[in-house]
Image 1 (tube, rainbow, N blue to C red):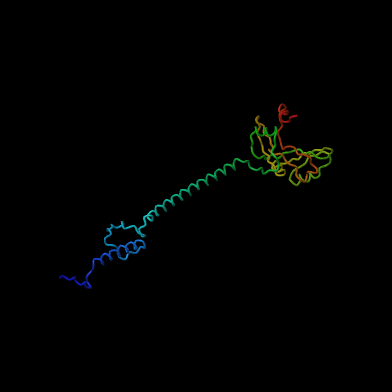
Image 2: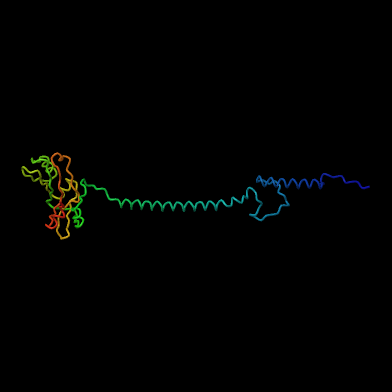
Length: 236
């Protein structure tokens, strides 16, 4: 009668072999999850380099990060360029709008209107006048010597012509001095018929120190119209 052979220390039972294989499977699965594989299962297929199993160190989404980062950089560069173009366009529009607004008047007098403004508009502006004599009329508040006007004119390099008993006076001087004293421009113009005359495009204002003595100032104008034009320049 045959008796079973006693299992020695070097023999391996089939059940033990199956248990070891199960342990290998468990160890391989745990190692894939944790990034550590102590004993990989020999029955798993062999992968070529770069084609390993999908584990933590082979995350397929990680391969998209450089491409996504490059696309994000390109988008930011595109946006920065567009914003730069918009800023330049806005600056150009601001300059254009500022040019469309009329410049502020640096002179004290207001711009003249009416027939005299049409006269200057239809004439050629020859630039600042350098005439030695220009004048304007001052209407006085009384028929007494205008002491304040005499003093103010002398201080500004001008002269005054007045006759006793008159309630008006003539203030005269070089074109530059008149322009500086009253804070206006005095230019030479050439009319449509070729005549040259001086004029100021602003109406001079009465200086503060003369308002108690001077009631009104006339225009700074050296144009003498022909008789047939007088009625148009002096409407009733």
